[in-house]
Image (cartoon, rainbow, N blue to C red; front, side):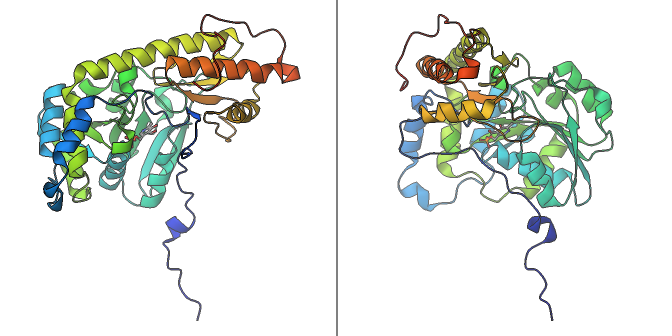
Amino acid sequence: MKRRSLIRSEIRCLSAYVPGEQPRGTRLIKLNTNENPYPPSPRVARAIRRHLGARLRLYPDPVSLRFRERIGRTFDVDPERVIAGNGSDDLLTMGLRAFAGEGDLVQFPWPSYSLYPVLAGIQGARVRRVLFSERYELRLEQFDPRAALTFIANPNAPSGTALTTAFLRRLARRLRGVLIVDEAYADFARENALDLARALPNVLVTRSLSKSYALAGMRLGFALGSRELIGAMFKVKDSYNLDQLAQAAGEAAFADAAWHRRGVRRIVRTREAFRAALEERGWEVLPSEANFVFARPPGGAAEEWFLALKKRGVLVRWFAARETRERLRITIGTEREMRAVLRALDISRSGRGSHANGVFRRTGMETGMPIQA
Ligand SMILES: Cc1ncc(COP(=O)(O)O)c(C=O)c1O
């Protein structure tokens, strides 16, 4: 008798999420996973040190109350309307478990964060991709109002572009299901959807401490929404989803608002200078409201540029899919790192024959730094 497969059929045909490369022990300029180039607030390390030792024999607070109270004070919302996550990926997982069942429709703009189809696939939900235009714009009518769950990464990854809050408000009113606005990059943007999550019963905002708070290694995020949505997520979360150190680190990070503000400003300033420098070299750069840019080299041979940069010790992200293959996603690092990137581009270009055609000009940012920042 033929044995039944040990693996669920949805999982057998699932393509797993592929995280960006995390090379170890090299001197690369690492601009491939949108991490923050600056360290977290020194208060974070102090808070973690205070928690090391005997206390670790105890389980952590399963509902991360102190961290949620701190978030509540920061964003002027009742902690009952906040849930903490082991990174915002954890919150997206909870959202899927709580709001979309097997066979339900889950929709999201595309190209976007490639975890969404994976989470929907695990759940056995049906997936609908709402295609962005070439300029990464969308129309309301493209969305199916019957979807149980709609994810919108805003600003979007990998494009860095943002939809307006007015658009999201109209969308939320049109949808019968839940709208999750994934705001992993919102601190680098002009607008956010927190007011929508405060006011509308079907809107949930998720936030990450991985980017603007420089805590990707700590795995911290939170979601804010109505009591009904947050209550449902509490039911499906892993019991102890944040360890003690992460909870302490999160509280400390929020306590140092000045550090956070300074870091964000610096990255936004560098982003704008880098964008201008790329444009002067003939690259087409989408308007970014995140801590990265998504840019098309002259001629569109992005993979070649990806490999050329890697050879020179600069790691960026290239996505092979048809819709994304002509662009590179480049995380904004320190000013020094970005100068080194420009220099690596200029050296690569001069060895590339067909692209050494005079569209590249030197800019204020390009100062002949060595490649290693
Ligand atoms: C759009 C988007 N959402 C969520 C995440 C996950 O963030 P976290 O590190 O908080 O899990 C990422 C990470 O790159 C992202 O790009």
